[in-house]
Length: 426
Image 1 (spheres, rainbow, N blue to C red):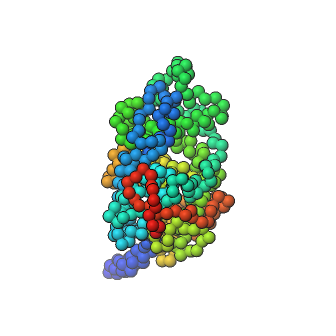
Image 2: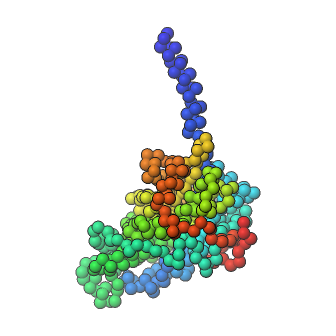
Image 3: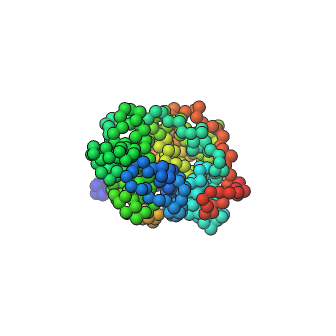
């Protein structure tokens, strides 16, 4: 009898506590800021400029160096459709055109970013006459490049030289290996990477290797036939190994402190100000958008992702999907409200090589998602906004922050290689 009474009391207690536990876990997503890389582009140097590094001609691209390709534009539209579904599921935007300003797209001023911003806006809201914000292509945007050019520290070298992947890259470039291979390459006037001597030359070799390995990744992501990807040697596994040279070069330059703080503080300060504004705070730094905005997509570069990673002291490397900064790859900042208290979560959303190659994000695993835990809250997925703000202020370089936003304009999201006249600002 006493046992049955105890059970009834326990069940009653559980029933009474359940709403309180549910209420304690209740959180409302107030704002999402997505900082992502532009879509698939051609290498920034023409094939003839890359020719000295390879024994065979490089693959020809359908666009000028550095430009977004039609395949890259298609991929960004598909990626945006994936985000639109996610925004609807998370209660940020229903997709209704009368609420289209709930979502804002901001792009850097380079032509490939303009084109990526246009494609992203099209994929998000094709029926709503969408626009995106950017400066004209002849103006630098300090949100993405603070100053006329990136200001890195002199890059350090890896502990072991050469990296194992460098030997593989050299073999792919020359189609042979060993000392006789290098000797023949030199006799043919080729530039080699594996036999660089001295710290200065090795640092240059690693920077070049990072760029060349990314060019091979772009061939794969562009969807070229297998015979035209790394001269027929670029299957997904090989490309994944080679692109880690790009990761390594960025880890030793863009991501390392204080270079990350010099290059990334301005962008991060405005992202933080946006989160603070959504949390009801006033800040001397201008938020990226109006307080009514629910989601912001900021279309930058791999350098921006690396700099933010350094400032956040974050690492999201996934051995199964080795490219740390793929086209369309994103850092996602979410602001949550729980009973008047605000917290921040930071996560990644990185396209797989397969999804880049197919320009298709319909599959559940097309984006590799990972929640990052920040140093102020190492055991929690969410960290109080005030704690994050205090911590980030100790990591950002105040001399590299402009409190004002650049005077960006709204551009119509139409298919184009480069924008012309701006739309009416919104």
